Length: 425
Image (cartoon, rainbow, N blue to C red; front, side, top):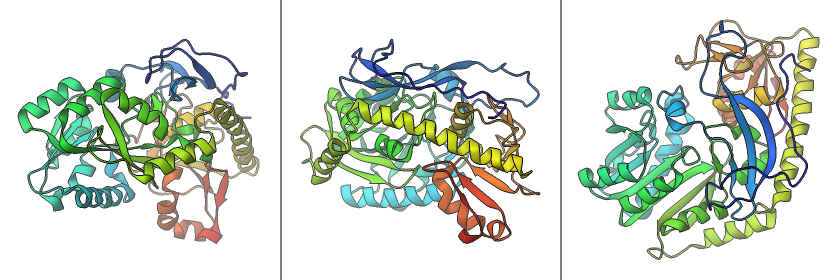
């Protein structure tokens, strides 16, 4: 095994967490998997810091037996996690293209025209809002992290540097009027003030306005064993059933739902005030599919936990095989979820010597907990890369065709451990 100790424990059935459900307020949240005390994944550290200096917090996943919301029990205050943030959404080719196609689809479906207001929650560096230029709509981003809000503002994207909640929405409506479209991509599971946010959305929408949310789909996490999507920033993990249970408490309902191939599989829900638009067949079809697959049942998540244990065994065995053969392995990127995987599985620098990144905000630091150093993506190459951002593997296979043809390998840990080599070039 790796010199870094694995932090993961799968409990016996029936262990309950001492918490109030973030969605329904109930107290029957059963522990599914305990990933151990872990550092905040996006709080990268200096490599020369003494081991263990960074704070560690419980990372436990539970299933609410009342509303079926899957969630973590410990909350790191949002001011600690999001006021300075190392992730920018414009660093891949995949996301801008995805957001442009989504914007065009939304505009066509709901008649977005010049002058309409589009508000993006957790707008990051403005990547999605930039894609609305074709429509002539007014855009406004709301971003809590000052460093990335500044990037958006410098790029000409109107952006408020503050947390999105009911108070913020009241201020937006007062200054800009109601929103025709509100969007949230990769942020809706971050929300400490969950009910205040949903209340704000309901108040900010115009009479026929639509809220479009894209969030990592819990069903996809289960089917792909994508446990690395669990980290302290991700407080809730949605199915259509649990998302609807949340929205309905604030007079909103999902009227269209689909799965989109981004971030390893996300749910896209179109939401409006209850009764404003007819509920489409897509909602009923997804509801039926979730029942068929057992996404509302605790047994499904117990099996998920067992699958994570098996994944750990397979990946660690592969990396130890590289080590015993004298081969070098580096991490390809240092995404937040990579910290979860490495810390949970006990994978340290003895198995993965370094991580390489093109995000300059991460270069020169180290992945917290396991202390794998992060260097710039340039120069020498290893025998193999461990692709922590496995959800972008299609893009990376194209980018690294020459490396693969020369004998290099790209190892993906999820949905199953697999090494891409010359045959993929």
